[in-house]
Length: 446
Image (cartoon, one colour):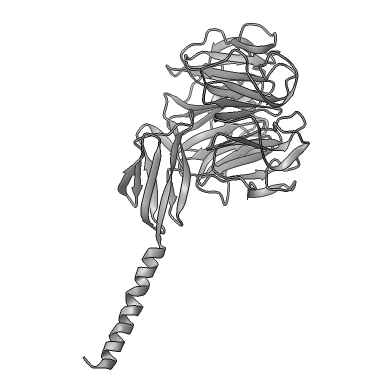
């Protein structure tokens, strides 16, 4: 072959072959992370992970997965029978580690309960959302502002994996990682723009927080106390990233502050601190601050003025306002640092009401402490308690949720129970009578 043709052939090979190899190498990514149980924080094993429809791996007993040589644009999906996973797919765009996917078990018939201030929400295992009680601001999501005693279905909302209710607004996370919100005069669910790949959503009084599967946290809405955590006190109509916070696995929001749990078991908080709800000695913070004294935490909850954390040894820790004994330490003295709840062990779930706290134990019993004016402690009285007391007539409970001054619980046979305030029909028992002991909810979800 003549030299000039050899040079031409080499040039053609460089143009058509070498760049293709460079592009392939640049488009290959390593993606790893964890799939965690929303109820326990533990890993979910045997989740099928596919890349462009082809089974790649299954998660380890600890819920871990790792993918290599994933092309840019590849669709990575997650599936396990009997579970809803959020988000259930992501699109590969870069190498990523510590991806967090949250799994919600399809319990019968309800996957999750959430208590608003004077209304209640339940997520059915078919992915639909039902609510009852106060609806002046459209927080039930059925395109009305009419109070509802029988449960009403949120309009046009399916494929939901998780819910969150707060004061006058509600949120739902769909399997596809999108967030839908309603309330505050929005009468039916609307999608949040420019927000994707979400694992957890938390509704505050006038702001919302969302956890992306990459471990970052995003917030929008009112920000007068720095509750969005973006370093300002300027409200935002679109999601803004919380400053200097990553590797987050759980979030919670309340009136004008927010808290987050990192994978290392530490807890961080930002926003207002007038009652010590941030667990730090300051007037407040518009950026996340670590709450000292909390390690090995697996679950968090918060009210407007006090916080609650569940440790991996089954003990419960609280901080903030204690005017009615809601910290459970035997006093009514506020605490800027976490204190251990007395005489309470083997706890598996926690929830914070406005001025009271509830906990679910491993044996299926429920305990409550704090304010009791409306019977929210469930012991048959309206006398507050500064230490945990057992809620009457409840056993084999699998899930709990505290509202403003009422509570919800689900037993293993799928029956829902409610107690406490009921002036707006938030207990769902067909009356507006407060209940100082749990009553079975009369729900017709058709």
